[in-house]
Amino acid sequence: MHAPTNNIPSIVAPRGAGLAELALAVGGLAIGTGEFASMSILPLVADDLGTTLPAMGHMISAYALGVVIGAPLITIFMARMPRRMMLVLLMLMFAVGNFLGALAPTPGLLIVARFVAGIPHGAYFGVAALVAAGLVPPNKRAQAVGRVMLGLTIANIVGVPLATWLGTVLGWRSTFVIVGGLALLTMALVAVFLPHIAAGNSSVRGELGVFRRLQVWLTLMMVAIGFGGMFAMYTYVTPTLMDITHASPVQIAVLLGLIGVGMTVGSLAGGWLADRSRTATIFGVLVWNALALACFSWTSSNLWLAGLNLFLIGTGIAVVPAVQTRLMDVAGDAQTVAAALNHSAFNIANALGAWAGGMAIAAGMGLRSTGLVGAVLALGGIVVLAISLAVERNEAAAAAAT
Image 1: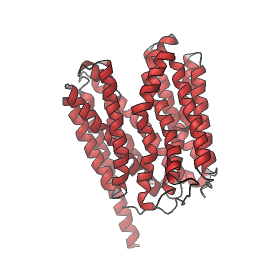
Image 2 (image 1 turned 180 degrees about the vertical axis):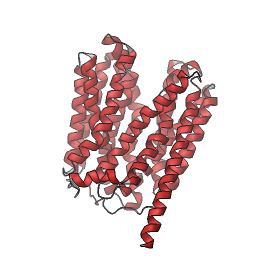
Image 3 (image 1 turned 120 degrees about the horizontal axis):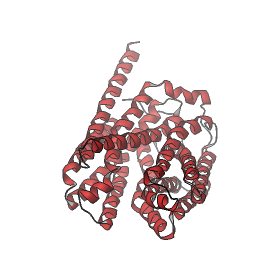
Image 4 (image 1 turned 60 degrees about the vertical axis):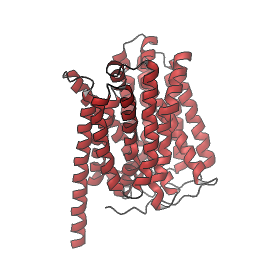
């Protein structure tokens, strides 16, 4: 196993690590609410702007594209910026993107606004993870990262339903106003509860060096393929619950909330497990995901079993702290961009899972098949992990021999 890196500086928060982690987690709440609520208000947006649902769906793709492009570019070219200032500017960019979305008069301008809002997503989480890891002793890094990611999971329980409801009552533009307001709140909390944190020592050239590291590529590929399994199911979960489970709208809202509860439990458990054995945690969670997703093909026909199964699928997010800290360790001096690239990989997983699940449905396999497709992708992630570990062992053996 790769030895933990010593490149993460120790950080002392003026009002304690707990409040600093809370400030960072509120940013995750803002980003998570904005990302997922935009999916739930899609029909309202399409109807109000006089366009079709598939055409307006491009705003979801535009946001994901912003994440994939923005994560490496921002962290590379802002590598020498003090961390607190960087986090504040990233949240400012996210707020601007959401406020522009609230004001957008046409579908085209709304798509551009969503692209702008997506740009700081990965960079924020990457830098927040590095800061959280520096707030605690080395043997508790993954738990700190998991607590920061709680904001993202709680968004699925509270933020998304509330923003969606307000969007229905007050109009879809209010959803983006609320998310922008959360971003401004995060800016204030970060400014108050985080100390001045010097920039990393890496230059732009040093950060670009991350792309020459095979272990970074293999870890990102493992995320993109292995976690794509969850998105193969999640993308089509609402029509599945409507047509297969025959759940009512209220029941569907509760069932989706159970995924968020599972994610919250998974974030806490995943950090604890990763601090004890990171590799075993990644392997175990991918196996868990494969089994849970495969079961959904059968449990989706029963309301109670589907609810339990969705909770268990949600816990699969336990892999995030382990993967995040693994990327920190295999990145060498390019810590910031590697941490941000993790979220680019998750958005690629989103696109890959949605595509694979859609292909299965289009082929006549039905909505139930998305669970099996997800299980296959999770198994694919295990294969990539095995390759990564084999390469790591060979490199270690070669280094020992010389």
